[in-house]
Image (cartoon, rainbow, N blue to C red):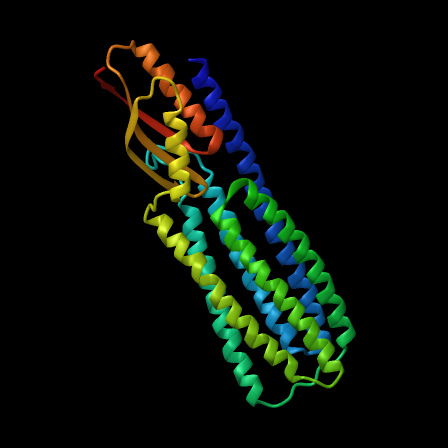
Length: 303
């Protein structure tokens, strides 16, 4: 029975650490986007730069997307209740789809506006130095946020934080493009902004495709990757007393893998011994996937 307690402690500790990191990541995302909006709004009035206006609008959408992530994560980490026996983890995948819509919509608007600007009148930009200073600040703030998000993703594998991180990866490229556009405008090359904007829009559409598809697959209860399934089975079979396994079923909800399988045990062992073997098998699996929800069915078989 001690094995059961150890397994539960492992799961609870990992669950608490993951929840803390997820909350910190969402708060950091909202705070960063809010500061950048204020800074870009002030400098846009000073410069009249259309490329800066584009990144201002993009940061505004980032706040909306980050708020969606914030609420989705708060819902996702809510424990299971009478109406949601498997928890609320799929709120993260719904947030990913919403984020994907934001990214895709931003990309289409950016591409259409850029094409319109290419054929329109040239826009005169003023106070390029102020715009450049703000874009450098934006770059630094975004890099710091991305570094923290990467740490959280490594620890939690959160789909919502992955999606939010993609937003800021695109922002990083956008900020670089605006920085180059402002510098190019000062040097007499206004079309540099349009060329870079087209490249960024195409990258946004390409990046969001796989993100949305993965969210859809998880909402449809796609099984864990084949290499994870093989390792889970290997660890269960490595326990003395486990004669075989069958009916292995897996899925992911939010950041929590759900694993269910039947263990074949000798029919003449005691019930306590059977549960002890099941507890050791569960611990072995949790050492590989600490945040998993593992359920074993103990099936008696002959000699």
